[in-house]
Every structure is written in structure tokens, then in C-alpha cells.
Image 1: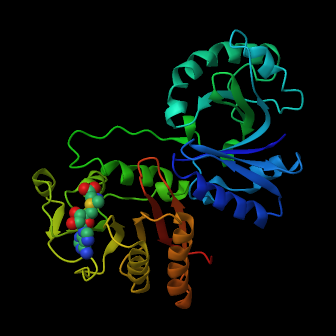
Image 2: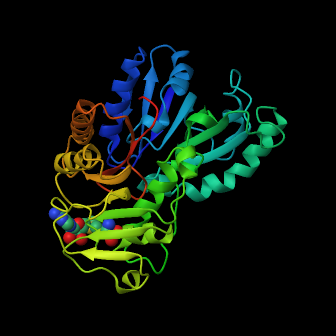
Image 3: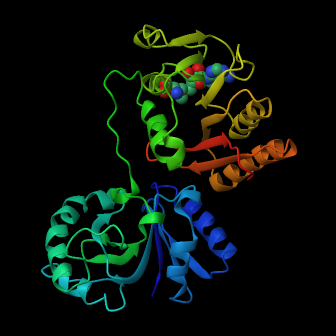
Length: 357
Ligand SMILES: C[S@@+](CC[C@H](N)C(=O)[O-])C[C@H]1O[C@@H](n2cnc3c(N)ncnc32)[C@H](O)[C@@H]1O
């Protein structure tokens, strides 16, 4: 038995399954998905065991919308004696690559949450045993894959590994951020996470300070707050009221206007961000039009997905963007992800690039 486990937000198992099945087929790899509602993970079971490793390298986590983590599993151990869960796990590792680190974790679901404390406590004794049996390097080695033991029940776990260059470095694939007490809303975490997770490494190096930004649907100002704290000057567009402290920063101008009709006053906008609660197709079209008119260079926006066929809807939105921008022969790229701080929505980072696509 071999395949991949994908962690996702509980409730999004179907979307993750549809996406993974489609991407695996594109890679010519055949298997079947197992997914149960609200479990916070799905598995893709390969018909040929050797395909699991091929998929773990070929399917890029950065390009998956709904998956938070991707682990190649080689075994599923069930009915373990809870007095000794180490031996049955070590007994499954005959053809396992030598790993540089170990993560013991569970899903971000109701049942998974009950296992968190156990996983934390179990890590040290398991790590010691794996070092002794030489399945784990004697020190943390960043050149080697990371071993994952993913508990789904107290006596059942998937045993697998991930490649560092194609996995999330965070426990459960989740970057946990603390909401700054002075931020006007908890939505602030969505944009903070987007900047930290969606931007490719080279884009993270860019100079934010002094850049001009537009925030469509800005009130009360959680996203504007993230732009301001990065030193940007923000045109905040919304009919609602902005938090007073943000306005006192001197970096924000408030426009009580319709975000669909707003046009920037000067051609100096680097960043467009948008968190308007609106139909996703409409938002996608608006974002593409800003790029078409060369009103901004980079954008981060949310697509709200209250419907059932969420994966299909995101694909339609991306098609709208592709149609508009490729008809103008624009060089652009995007990354789309359901972030940890997103709810029924995904976040898109869209940027104009200098090199040909
Ligand atoms: C989810 S809230 C934004 C929260 C904000 N990003 C934050 O972090 O505080 C959505 C906002 O979009 C605004 N909005 C919805 N439709 C809009 C439109 N057509 N033009 C401007 N703002 C709009 C609403 O007034 C609301 O304040």
C-alpha cells in the first residue's frame, strides 16, 4: 500500500480530492482517492506502489489550491497496542529512505485535535528509537526527507515522508500567526499569511516600504494595517468606516467609493489588494482588468466560495484571468491557495513578470 496523504481544511475534502485526482491523471499516475467529510485530510492510493514517490516529487504543493501538506506514505498501521506503538512503526520502515527529521502529527479536525497532545509527547521517544534503528540521522539533516507519522486514531497512523523542497515546513502544514492587538480586524491574518506563504522567495526580498497600494473593500482596515506596517501608502476604498488609529498613521487615504468603479488617482500603484465580499467571477474579472490597464504590478485578492463546487469555481475564475491577460499578451503568473486563515475562500497572488511565461 502506498500513496499520498494531503492535509486540508476540514470541509474541503471533496475539493482537495477533485484537484488531486485531476492533477495525478495529468501526470499519468493512476489511483483512487479516499476522503471522508470533515476529516481534514484525503489519501490518494496509487495502483502501483512505485508511483507514490514519483507523484510526491512531481505534484507541486505550491500549485495545489486546497492541500496544505503532501506526504508520501508507504504504510498504514492499524490496531497498534497503545502500550507499544514504537515497534509496529519501526517494523514498517524496511524500504524507507533515511530521514533528516521526524514530525508526528494529526489532522486539523475535531478528532485530530484530540491527538495533538499525544503526538507531541510521542515525538521524543519515537525520535530516539528511530535514531537507534538508523532510520533517522543522528542530527537534524536538511538534505534528507522528513519522516511523518500521521495519526488518525490513537492506534492508527500513516507512515510517510516528504521532500523539503515540495512540502510545507510547518506542523500540519499550518503557519500559525498571532493577531496583533492593534489590528482593526482578525482578517489581518489572511493578508499577513498571504505575504509570507504565497510570494516566491525572490519576491519576498522586494522593497515594500514607500510603495503605493490600493485596498478594495478595506474596512475596518485589517488588510490596510498589513500594508501600513510594511511601510506602504494606501488608498483604502470602502463605504464603511476605517479604524481611526490607522488613519492617524498618515499613510492611509480613505475613499468612500464603489471598488468596482474606483480608479487610482496616479499611475504609481504597485500593490492591489481586495477582500470585497462579492461574486468570485466578478472579482476575478476586476483584478484582470486592473492588470490589463496596467494600474498595478502585483495583487493579492480573495475569491469567496460559498458554493458547493468550489474547485470548479476557482478554475473558472482563473480562466477569466487567463482569457483577459493572454489576449493582451501579458506576462503574468499566479499562485492560488486556501490559506489557514481563509474560511470559505481562497487567496490569489497575481503578478506581472518580466520574463516570458
Ligand atoms: C470582509 S470585509 C473586508 C475586511 C478587511 N479586509 C479587513 O481586514 O478589515 C469586506 C468589505 O468589503 C466592502 N465592500 C463590499 N462590496 C464593496 C464594493 N463594491 N466597493 C467597496 N467596498 C465593498 C464591505 O463594505 C466590507 O467592508
